[in-house]
Length: 81
Image (cartoon, rainbow, N blue to C red; front, side, top):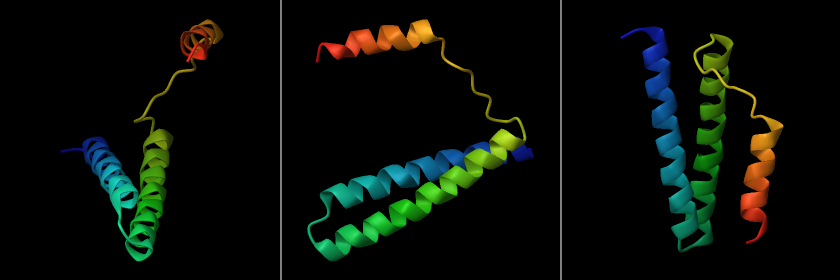
């Protein structure tokens, strides 16, 4: 397994953890539990962001700019609701 694959696995794991903590926060029954999940979620989001930044810096997470026509089409599609 090379460094790129390791980072991809770390990013996927971090995203999954964020999802779990978000659901824990939403479903929590007491303020203390809610705060604990929120704190954990914020920490996980920070970690995920760091992994994403490192991958981007290495060229391992390429992105492309959306065309303005595509953006307008999506806006029109969802503006009715």
